[in-house]
Amino acid sequence: MDMDAPLYPHRSIHSVKALARALGEPPERLLALAQRSSHLYRYVPQTKKDGVTPRHTYDAHEPLKAIQRKIVDRILSKVTYPEYLHGGIRDTKLPRSIYSNARVHTGAKTVILQDISDFFPSITTEHMQRLFVGLFRFSPGVASLLANLVTREGQVPQGASTSSYLANLVFWDVEPALVTRFKAEKLVYSRFADDITVSSRTPIPAAVTSQVIASVTWMLSQKGCLQKRSKLHVRKRGQALISGEKAEAVTVTGLVVDKPTPGLPKRTRLAIRAAVKQLEDRIKGSRTQLTAEDEREARRVMGRIGRLIACGHPEGQRLKARVRALLTLAPLLQRHAADAEHQPRSPAHKLSSSPPDTSSISNQESKPG
Image (tube, rainbow, N blue to C red; front, side, top):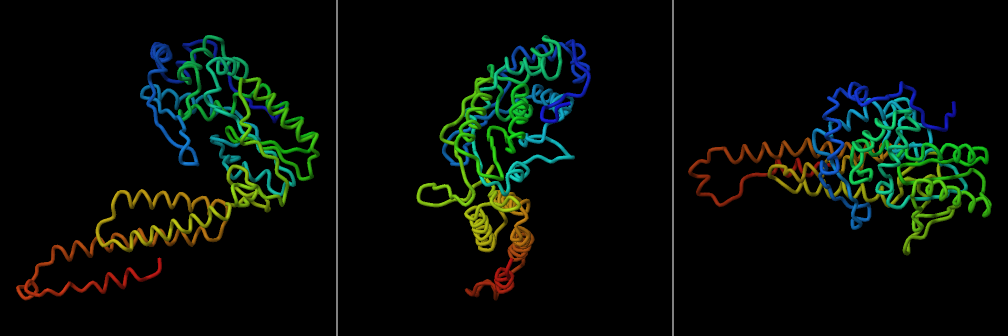
């Protein structure tokens, strides 16, 4: 068995009835949904990291959404995924993430970064039919039905629960041979969705670099995909990537790889620290009830702190404690404000123009988080 290739180690499905039994759905429902699946999505516009470029994502409506979850749970998650795939895979034995993807390239002397242009729209219904026949060994009829259940207007929709698994598998018949060849040349290959990284612990000669880029480009072309030339970078250890007027460390899926373990770039760590300070000022400066936006912002900041903790940065736990202290403090402020509002006032108090004593709140607010 080739451990560099995905494997579906279960019985093949050769009829629509057998597929219906596997998914726990009536055959008629599967066939009906497959016919009109393109109309069963909600457009969920998002923006990419730059905050400007649109990311076109879709969310399936019920009951298609429930069936797609079953396809994930009962078919796609049963695949044994090779270690070089890191995006959107549930694997308790070998957890996959941006951290696992970056980790395999730490300490590399040369890193080749490549990106697939418009990846999800490039994956077609025909690609899915061939995948379900070739890798899963399903019958053409079953493969066609599944392909229609997981595509929208002939393409794999980014955002659907099935799509990240399908993106990992689309190169099932061409990627393994490429990885095996790279291994023989002492090169490390990984892919996180549309981000492809090839690295070496020794300097890579220019001729070999060109060969690597050409090989990856050829692999992409076999599925009608193109390389995004603007995201192609060849980096050498100690060499900073010049972005505008600032020098940036070499990163793989957003993590610095020039040390033994992946880490967040300094600018990202500073931004997280600043976000915590802004949250402290925002909550401590308010004596009214925490708004829904305050709570959402706190969750967002906690998520960013989670990246620090996952990378093992010691500051992560300290920042987490500060945010938790804020969320503990907020209910105290709310209760104090409520008590003051409902406390009966004496006639003398009504005549007084002096403000109520807020020293207890001020003292509480002045404590460090």
